[in-house]
Image (cartoon, rainbow, N blue to C red; front, side, top):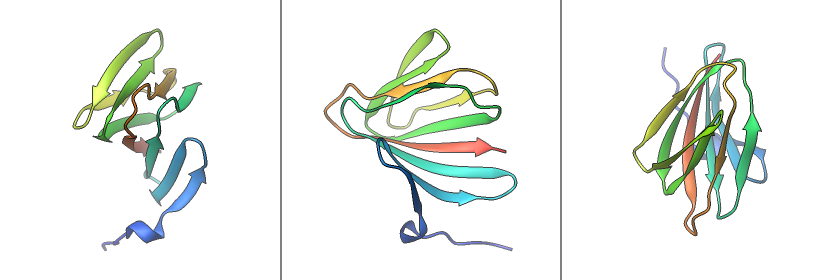
Amino acid sequence: MYKIIRSEDKTQILEKPKAFLYHKNNEIELVKLNLQQNNEVALHINPIKVVFYVIEGSGVLTIGTSSYTLQAGDMAEVHPDEERGWSNPNPESLKILVIKTL
């Protein structure tokens, strides 16, 4: 069985940075983050694997004590219980698709 999810069906789950939940079931959660200049997602730990796909712009992903500059088209996989966070030091918007495996 298929399911079509339209952009207008998303639910805003954070205000700053803006985050929208597009889909969630027992296996996966899809979230779109939109970080404006100087926005950040503070370092945090999740007990699940997360894949980040940069849709637009560029920003800094910190995993543990290492930082990586990622740009549109780049992807990163972060394993459970690894500390991670994002920042956007750039004037253009950073848009990220977050794929969480539950």
